[in-house]
Amino acid sequence: MSRSYRDRGVVLRTQRLGEADRIVTLLLEGRGLTRTAAKGARRPGSRIGARLEPFAVVDVELHRGRTFEVVRQVETVEANAALRADDRLWAAASVLAEVVLHVAVEGERDHGLQRLLRAGLAALATAPAEPDVFVDAFLLRAASAVGFPVRTGSCARCDAPGPHAHLSVVGGGTLCGDCAGEGTQRVGAGVVAAVRTLADDGAWQALPGLAREAGPDRVRAGSYARAYAEHHLDRRLRSYDAVERPGPGSPEVRE
Amino acid sequence: MYEGALQSLVDELGRLPGVGPKSAQRIAFHLVAGEDADARRLAATIVRVRETVTTCTRCFSVAEQPLCRVCRDERRDHGLICVVEEARDVFAIERTRDFAGAYHVLGGALSPLDGVGPDELRVAELEARVAEGGVHEVILAMNTNGAGEATAAFLSRRLAGTGPRVTRLASGLPAGGDLDYADEVTLSRAFAGRREA
Image (cartoon, rainbow over all chains, first blue to last red; front, side, top):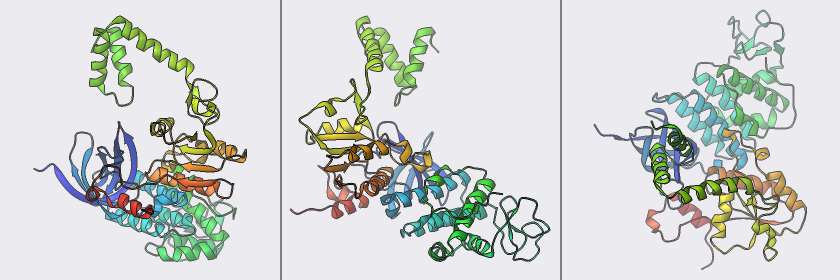
């Protein structure tokens, strides 16, 4: 059996290895999360180094190694160079990568997560004026992709038809008056609508409008998205703090 | 595997970057078999480096005095600051003998995944140097990888409007290489950075 194979995926992270090599972590279409060694990738003349930069979509030929798969060849499918040319986009894309590094599983393909990541990076690569709203959207959509969809149309606990005005992180979305416990925050319809837009898989093009028009509701929905993702994915997202946010808005929804 | 001091030496050498167990073993046996004076000189040098080498208070490169050799040199242009990620980058540039300005060592590059933001780098110190006045150009000489590009973009924004000209090192085709071996990212940059012939 050949020890080499080809696959396509997204570069999530690179780390130094030895004198001139790099560990490159990829989310591959066929094999999920995969750690590879790119020999000589840090040398200026390397043919593979420039192609294996974070957030690039690449076709790779890999050779099975003892500790890591070894990169033999790389072809760029989508360089997403804009994400490295602007520190605000770099920070935003890093949150997407951090989430995927946490939820993706080595050796397990996940088409939903792959599709979501590539769509999120492509949306960010258009250099939107407010990348934070794309990050917030990705958080809710990634949570949904791994089994924690946020519910805004009905009560997340008893299914009572909505709309409802209580928003709960732990409860999984909006809650009706009967299910909302003490401490659950009442929010305006605008916040619930903003959460719905953020979570609506596929509607990336609606996000710039949300950023422009929703104002404090969007800021509050964003803080909810972070709290929701961190709670349900059970991880504090440290790259999130590097993302530039709009000025102080409404109080956070953390419950 | 080995006894006492020899095993300790193999273990200590094996903790060094780029030294695996086999290499650690080979170096240890080399030291054991070599001249006594060679081993003592090596040990004394390591101790002396630890005792005397520190960080330059102005540019944060390595120094044996409060100011490094470059910062003490009055013949250099201290209004021209080359910003690099690591102190070893200073020596890479010094090897060219083409640069006669000063340096500023950031201490890394922006890496949100690792929790490295502007506060973890010597950005405030750079801004303070610029604010002191007399700086006419800041050259951003970050690595040409994603983190380096993002850091350069960040510094460009932060330094915009503060006075000095802010420039980036050119990037493109490596010297001595064939065009058809260049990857498309490098080639694109070479086109973007073309100049009058």
